[in-house]
Image (cartoon, rainbow, N blue to C red; front, side, top):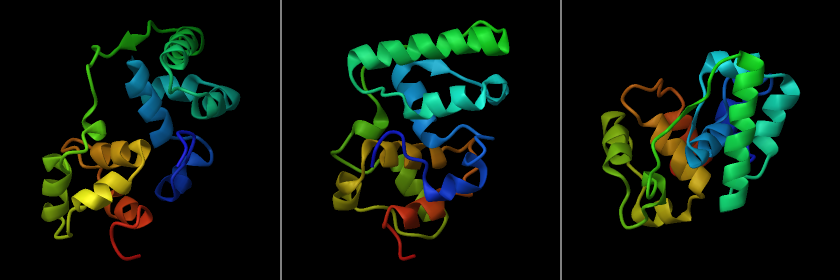
Length: 155
């Protein structure tokens, strides 16, 4: 599962890049860039595709991604970029337990949370998506479709 993947549960709105795909949101968190939907909509379709496909894994790539996004926000949205505070690690990279946020959200939907073995089997992008989709202030309609897509629930 590459970091340029658009998940099936995102297909309705990601084909036209109307919303920010999870893979781009993942790269934004890695690079510490805040991007609003308004700013995203100011980008050209080529800008959006580049944001999805551009690598953002090594420290150099993360720095380049941050610079590229900051430049695009400035040039396309005519706004100053905003940045997230630096983090020593990310919750989706913790592998010693399924995050309580995900387990609690699954229980609230009356579905079983992922087991630790299932959590380990997921890519970082999949774990990131589940973290985002289980946030209390997030529109969580795609949590169950994501769980099914990631083979954590029967289809």
